[in-house]
Image 1 (cartoon, one colour):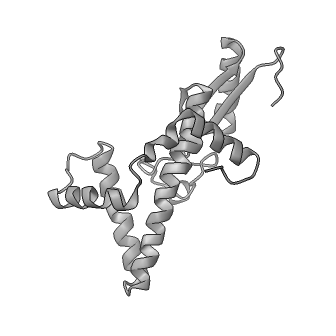
Image 2: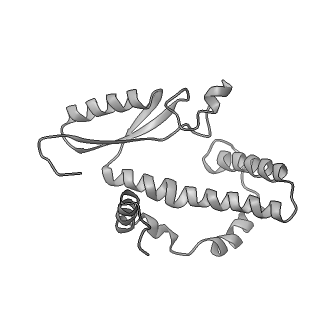
Image 3: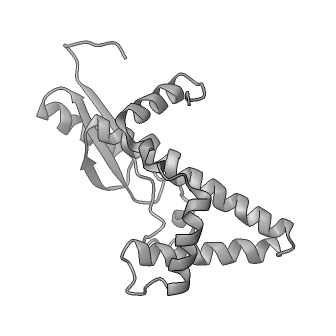
Length: 182
């Protein structure tokens, strides 16, 4: 965007409805993006402007993405860490690999519905454990499997996707519609 000192810049993004929620209405549970029925959180950043500009921006964002529970204030740089680095570069990539793993299990003879339901159920309990929603713990066998698989699935320097230079490079690649430079 062009730099102008006479206007405020407010940046916002929905968190989308959480996989951990208390929605009971089936239509609301199927509002995966939010902004229709399902409640969601949003993140907001004031790139340039006053605190009054922030308040106005948050009010507009709450209306745009309603129903909104919490609006989390972050910096523009933190917003870029959240998306694309965290949500797309890491989490979506891992989920694509998870989907490909289901397809591979099916290719090897596991019934598709059994593979999908098995993974979705395990994702549910793993979310409960890893994000502190459950008092359950990972089994020793599961911990060993993760330890053995991590080096096969991830490069040792994978966290470098969060280095600000890499985040900026990825944002530029996305906004310019091209593949990021290696």
